[in-house]
Length: 249
Image 1 (cartoon, rainbow, N blue to C red):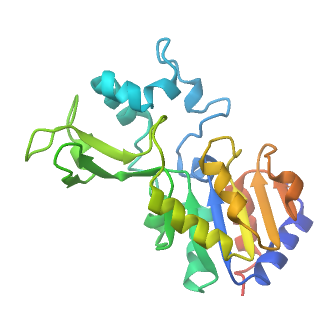
Image 2 (tube, rainbow, N blue to C red):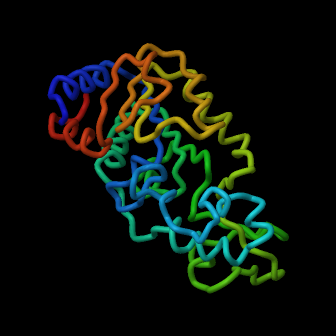
């Protein structure tokens, strides 16, 4: 159960902060109807017939079993019906006040941008960006979801690949540079909805040198020991409670 003192302390820190950066993971999107990865009912619990979800979502599997990859991807990774939840809406209000310097997300669902945020660093890409691996023509999500089997480029016939980082691939270098730049200039970092188990994404928070590290997660994380405030719980519930106290000034 949430403690009001924790929400009060969170609001106090945010009210005094002027350069906030948010670092989020899959736990941010569960309130929008998107399963996380490691919980009891998460993606990694899906029965895939002996092939782990991690293997299916790897660059090697994509290259060798492309049709099977897209079957899994369409069924479990794409949620176009999802809409922003409380945490997304709160962060949008912070950005409008020019207090949120950036959102660094491990999610590929595009919900932060859907909520209106502009300063979003999508470390693992987005389902809404897709490209031909041969001629690099870009395509919308409908090019992947509007067909069966392997989606093909209408110009050259090449495979259309989601602009997402698969296991075995490196995150986009320039996205990482931008994320580290925002972190290095922040006075407050909120880490929420992530166990910080996925590398190299989790290592980006080492760029933060500000005063206030806040961790909001259901389970312990490697960053807890150096945090100014740790709140154990559901991120969307916490931000909903924060919004009820009134918007930060």
